[in-house]
Amino acid sequence: MKTIELNVQIREEIGKKGTKKVRRNGNIPSILYGRGIKSTPLVVNKKEFYRVTHTKAGSNVLINLKVDGTKIKKDTTCLIKEVQLDPVTDEVYHVDFTAVSLTEKIKIKVPLVIKDAEEAVGVKEGGILDVVHHEIEVECLPTEIPERIEASIKHLKIGDSIHLKELALPSNVTPLLEAEEVIIILHPPQKEEVAPAPTEGVVEPEVIEKGKKEKPEEGAEAAPEKPEKAEKAAKPEKAEKPEK
Image (tube, one colour):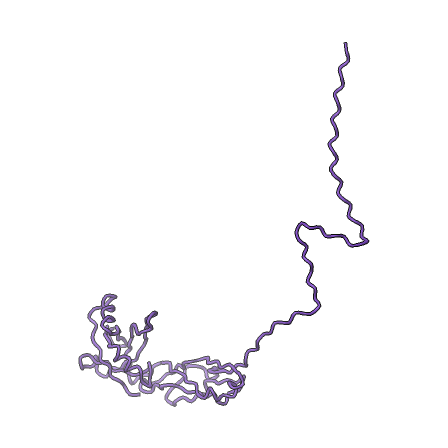
C-alpha cells in the first residue's frame, strides 16, 4: 500500500477556544501521537482530509504528514486512529493520527465486502442475510494492509453460512478471529403469524347490568322475600298510683 502526503499545520491554540477557531476557518482540529512521538496538536484542511480519505484504502490509508513542506519526523507514517463526527451536522469534528513503524506489524480492522448478493440462491428464495462481522481484524505490516476482504455469497442456500477459514486472505495477513468463526449466515424467512379466525356458533355470555335482579326460570321456586323488620314493641304504659 502506498502512502499519501497530507499537509498540516501546528496548532498553537489549544482548548475549546482554539478548536472553535479552527472549525470556523473551515479546518479540522487533530492530534498526532504514537510510540516515540510527542503528542502534537495539528490543524488539517477539511478538503485535504477528504481527498486523502476518499481513496480505495478508505480510512486505512497510510499518511505522511508534512508541515510547511517538511515532514514532522523522517520516515514517519501515520494511520487514522479515530474520526469524531458532529452529532448534528455529521461533519468531521476531530481526527486522531497515530504514528506507526513500517517494519512492525499492527492490528487493524479491514472492511468486509459482500459480493453476488442478488444472485444468491437463498436470497432469491426469501432468505434473510445476516452479516455477523462487517470488519475482520487482522495483523500485518502497515504496507500490507488489505483495502478490503471480499466474500461471495452466490452459492449460499437457506441455512448455509460462511466461516472465517473460507475467506480468501493474503498470505502475509493473519486474521485474529478463530477459523470456525461464523462471518455470514443465511437465515430462513420469518413466517408471519396469522390470528385465528373466530369460531362460529359461540355465544357470548349475557352481561347482567349492575342493580338488576336476574329473573327466575319458569317452574323454579321464587326465593323467599326477606321479612320486614318487626316494628318496635310499644312501651308499656306506667301503672297509676293507688289513691290514699
